[in-house]
Length: 609
Ligand code: GLU
Image (cartoon, rainbow, N blue to C red; front, side):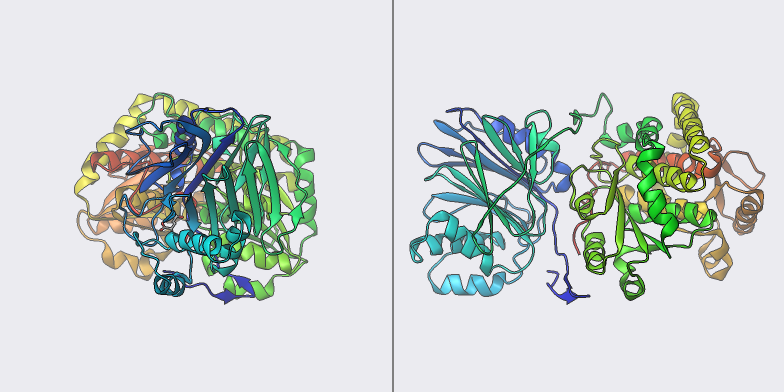
């Protein structure tokens, strides 16, 4: 368990992935199981070890739980009310078992609970509850919430609203949880740390961890903030301050997000679909007009220093963006959120922090942003998910507009954010139009690349050879330093092979000692001629030591044993050159019989600290 601590005066995030869904309708006997399952399916990327639904019925609470991906129910609830909740789990406390899967039922069969987060004082609470005679059926921390609510109802003689509130006040950690009460036909939810949105239509209400389940079903959305309690009865919504109990006026916003069909569109996996989408998504991400970019341009021009911030793949996209800004003579330092601590005292309101995230919910990143906001630092963000916490915390928020990225390993969000960063940087120096042309040119090149079957064949052949390879390395320079890091991450994430990315310049400082006959070395060769030559020289050096050199390059070279020909993306070469690595990771994962969409132990938007 990750302890809940204070650092830089802000709470450390212990937010956990997982998807929460709830649905309530005024239509009597509306079958809700399909709605709950569809909702869970669209949030499966948030956690996928087990799942469950609970539906209120005349006779009691119908519950079904399963291990593995969201599938179908084995039985149908009989005489159900139009009220249910569901959960897809990313286990933190207690193994992945049916018993530990949510929802968890109260000992009097009255209500059920699903939770996203960690009850950090759960041992203490559990001991107290056990002393009071509560028997624990699961190993989850969630079960303390169930018993505490029960205790408050029984002995505190409170109504459900007050029981839920006082339970919440006893929990430490970041916990968003939902309670469905069969008796009062009510759903209550409290947000703390993990996201929660509520969709509203004239006849029904849906709550979820993100907006995806709401699309096409709910015309309006309400973004719930931390420490707010939502009470849903039929299609009525009330929101309260969970600490004071005071009613809060809220505003529902039209949910304008395009209805995205979360399907594989004929592809075998989301990953390959998302890889192919990149020829369009780099265009969509840069469909901002000059006027729309102007507020960011102005702020960056005025800033003392610019920092970019991200975690994982987003940190590498942030690295590319920092480089684009440095290239136009703007002092920009890239920060990885998990290593940003020592910079935080140096950043103040004269600076700009440009934050990159796919989900906008990444815990490490949010922690830094919350801290900097208290110092009045201007936050500009580029996020893929609409309505995310990060977008809402930002002074200026842009969307990368790629549509939902379902595969856990990021592909299209990465390239979209690079393209957006490039357009922004070029707009600062008045090159908006040329930059747009350049992005269009890269898109055309990608189209051609994807259409040419030969390109996939070369990679498939290579992926076969790599099945038995134990270690490999990727090297690159300048923009391709970040490409090397991202390439290695992509391959690690879904193939579980040991691969390291490093700067070509680092070779002689140690890495070369690892190279032996038959080692696979990938070189990402691109950019200015001098940089290309540096990378080629490094490749020559490893080749001389018996390595098998794979060149990811627009031009062939004698140093390559295998040449993976990729179009020259010029300033955006980091977009074109990452594509073969994404494809290679995918094909290699398939050869290794891994599910590329759902790599082991990972979940999208790494929100665990
Ligand atoms: N801590 C809870 C559990 O392990 C919730 C995890 C989640 O957010 O999926 O069951």
